[in-house]
Amino acid sequence: MMARRYKNMLENFVAPQMLQHQCLDSITFMQDGAPPHIGLCVQQFLRQHFTNDRVISRAFPKACLPRSPNLNYCDFWLWGYLKDLAYRGRLITLQI
Image 1 (cartoon, rainbow, N blue to C red):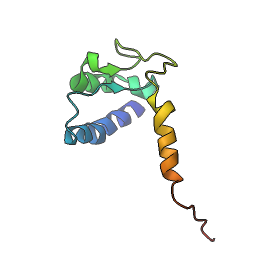
Image 2 (image 1 turned 90 degrees about the horizontal axis):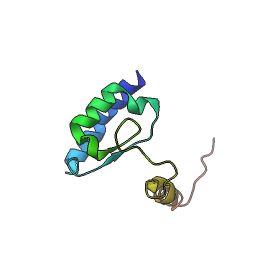
Image 3 (image 1 turned 30 degrees about the vertical axis):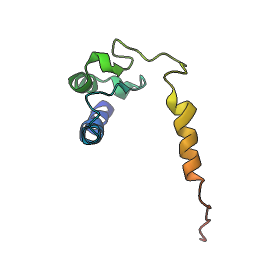
């Protein structure tokens, strides 16, 4: 059930966004090995849109290397960037 939900999110949001930004044909899709991410319906969807060569996942030939600094951009860049954005302005406490 969760794999179907994940596949629907990929199909109805992620893929259309990639098409809109014209990067669906050139991007390599990477995900972790969470059970919903390797469901058969998800694998079929990813093979249809990205092929085996452009997916990094536990269920594909290119498995994600654990703790590889080359593949963990979110850990080294994105989360710090998002935190900086969130705390850029002055925080306001709402009176209850």
